[in-house]
Image (tube, helix red, strand yellow):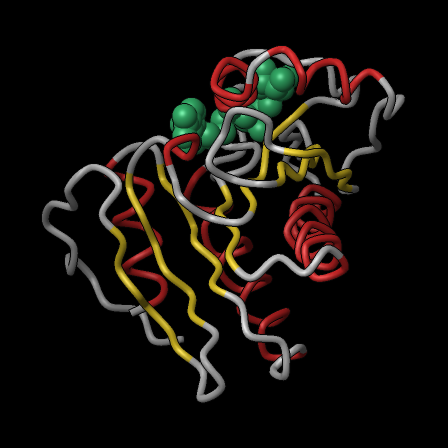
Length: 191
Ligand code: AR6
């Protein structure tokens, strides 16, 4: 992927921009806004190991999905860092929520491995459930302190690598940035 600077000026809330496409219909898009509002088969939650809710995007997803989500999460008995578990979406437009646990940033090489695992394992689980459109928040870049400039290339590269390795499986993957800066970094990286 070539890097190009300063491409994105302003993206409207929840507007989608296709960045990369494959011949059989798979797309990698970016979107700025609230992930809970997206009309996709599945949204990914940046959860913690308890899977029992929290702040940030986790809190927003639980609020939007309603109490059924927490009830189902209680039956999952947590999740290890880098792994992923799936639930229904309850009051969300999305039929499914995949809960993955990003690393707390420590500055060690293991962080990048675990962050990549979150994207990869979420996509594997999505495919097992026949998901054809999935949106990711920028995992670990909030409370867990992963620097955006380091997290963005890992997210984009892992997702694109997975899509290339599963070329026969048509899927739209959306990298959803809550703020403009996140989207600008995705766009610069993917352009
Ligand atoms: N839609 C899209 N992205 C969002 C939204 C939203 N509604 N809200 C926040 N973000 P964070 P983490 C972005 O802190 O760093 C929770 O308490 C946000 O701007 O939600 O993986 C969990 O329970 C940031 O770019 O998740 C864990 O304890 C990104 O989502 C812990 O936080 C991730 O920020 C996980 O920390």
